Length: 175
Image (cartoon, rainbow, N blue to C red; front, side, top):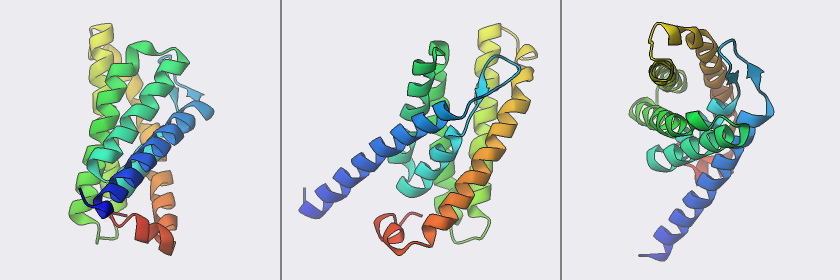
């Protein structure tokens, strides 16, 4: 392995760990209770930002581990496996769509919205398994949609601000 490749991988792993920790903190710090017993948070902002900065694999790792750890810390153990899968796929969807159309002015919003729709669908299906009723799990959709809208809005604003900083553009060419 070349020294340049090793440096890239080391930086990517360090940024993955930092974004996972930041996603955990963003999930834990601001928690708005939802009517279904869960809570809305800003963790999706970091999940999406990690996807834009790091791309698919590293972004998915950061996006999955941070919020799942927050679920574990918060006592929502039953959601840890679902969060790992849902947030990883969410980051993969965002990174994939963003990579396909990033030159377009609407790329951040489109990729974030698609990823958040997956999140809403994923938790609806998982909640349906838990309560054994897809109709019963419909109650969680509105709060997940609000959380998704906040995540898309905040991550778009952060990504646009970071894109304007030359050192960030140099270190994170996927942005």
